[in-house]
Length: 162
Length: 162
Image (cartoon, chains in turn yellow, blue):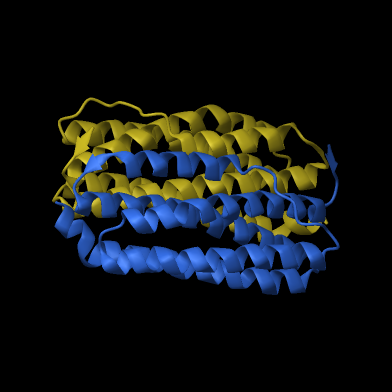
């Protein structure tokens, strides 16, 4: 495989993220189901809907670049979610389970933040301002979700889990 | 397995990170070797040394908690580095390769930032201020490394890669 241009690298990164979002869309409802804290549960449910919107934006972005949406299995998300599923199956108190779910979700968010960040930087560099604009909305959502998870953790769940 | 306390969850997270840092320590010298831009190459070399220090801090932290250092294979880092190794083997121009190396390294940094962040928050919650203090130093280093990578990317490499 030859990739001489940053644009090709960007499209590959979008395929990775398209796979990552699809993998996440399958797991988020389970995370919402396992969560006990009502704010956390509602947060996961909201993010499941957001993830569908983000998948749609990636499809739009492929279109803007004249590409057909395609996924390349995201091994990183596969690993993150493998750990997340393991945590969900562990025998813990509801409070510790919530703390673990937040930790797992923040790993997911950080993966998405860095990947959307890379794509947006590359899109700007190659002059695809429309792609940058579109996926920048998803980047903002991921950053807000991560911040919200930190707030939920710090405000109460961690203290309950001691 | 039963984990009823946040402290046990914290120790498990440290074992995950201990594995992650060890996996990374093996790959960083290859990333330094593959990088063309001298600032990027030097950055990877510096971070390889830092990673050894961070492994030492984790060992110290295990000691502070009365635990023997142990690793649980970090599946997330395994996935991130699997993708990184694939990128390194691809046939690209040196400029695109550098841009890809930065993207891969930022995925690593974000994984470590979120995981050190979780451990530090939990350490504070369970009253292990010494662990929080010690691993907080590693968290700061990871954040600085990530910031530095963004600067290198934005200042020049991405433009050269177009």
